[in-house]
Image (cartoon, rainbow, N blue to C red; front, side):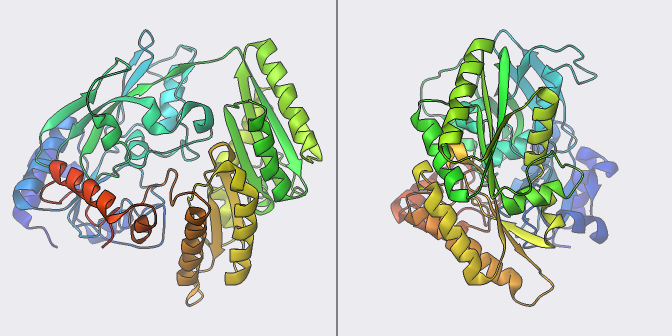
Length: 469
C-alpha cells in the first residue's frame, strides 16, 4: 500500500470504519471507470457523508501530499476517474440528498452524489421526500442520467438530449459548494442569475476534478411546457438524416432535442430489454422533441415533419402519447449500454463538429471504420454536432484495443480538421490529453495550468488529466 497505516487510521477517525475501503479485492472495483480501457488502482477509497468530512479528508491529503480523485458513479468515458498515481479516491456516493427545491428562484440545491434523474423525479413528485408534482424538471439530461451523478456531470460539463435548447451543464448551474485542495470550503455563485467579476462557477464546471471537489450544487430548473410533441423519422441513408438536421435548423426551428442514431445503434437497442419500437430497417433515424403551447408545439411539429419529408425521410411518425414518446427516448438513452448485444467491447468517441459538416463527418467515420476493420455505431446530439462514434472491438484479440484507440484518435483528428473539437461533453480526462494540443496553443495551455496552480499548487487534485504528459 502506498499510504501508511497512520493515514488510514486518521481517515477512519473522520468517516468511520464503514466509510473506508483498503481491501485489495474491493479496491479493484474502483480501478476503472466507464471508459473500460485502462485501469489504475487507488490505495484507499473513502465514503464521506458531508462536506465537512470531505474537507477533513482533503486537508489530511494536502498535509501529506497524497493524490486525490473525486468519484461519483464512475461513468466517465475519458478515463477521468482513474487514480493514475494511486492515493485516495473520494466517493461522493453517500452524499445523495436533494436539499432544497426553490420554485420562486427556479433552483434546486443537491449534494454532488445525487443521480441526475433523481432531480427531475423530485420535481415530478416521484420521490418519497417530494411526493407532489411541481411542474418543473432539470434540463441537463445526459444519456447516462439514470446512473451518473450531478458532481460527475459538473466535472465533465456533460451535455444531454436537451442541450440544443437549454445548453450543457454549465448553463444550468447557478452555484457550487466546493472543497479546495487545502481543505477550505467555499461557495461560488448564487441564486441571482447574473454576478459581476470572473465566472468561478464556469471555471470549476468542466475542470474534471483538477481544481476542487464539488460537494453541493445549486441547479437551474425549468417549468414544463403545456405540450411536447415527439417525432420519429427514418431514413434510407445517414447522409439524408444529416442533411435533415441542417434543414430543420435553417427554418428557424429550435427543437428541445434533436438526436441521431444509425442502423447499428438501432439494432443494438432493439435487441435488448430497452427496445422502443425503433425501425430496424432504417439506415438512420432522427428523434425530435418540440415544446410550447398546444397550438405552438403543433405548428412547429408540422413544420419539422415537412422538413423531414423534404429531406428524404421514408417514414415520419408523431408519438401518439407520452408513453410511446418515453419508449422511444428510453431506447435512445440506452444506446451505449446496449452495445453488448452487437459486440464484446467498445470505445466511445466524443468529437464535436459544425452541424453543416455532419454528412461529411459521417462519411469519414465510415471510411475510418473500414480502414481499421471495425464496425462503428453512431449515436449523437445532432442539434449541436456532438458525435458519439462507438467503435466495436474484441479485446480478446491481440492488438484490437490498440487499433480501436488509433481509430478513435483518427476520428477526433478529423473532427478538428473540419472545424470541430476533441470533446463535447465527456471531457479530456486521460484518454485525450495528448490531443488537446490540436485545439490549444502552448500559450493557452500555460494559462490553464496557471489557473489550476492557483487552486491546486501542490498538484494533488486528479493528477495526470487534461494536460499532456
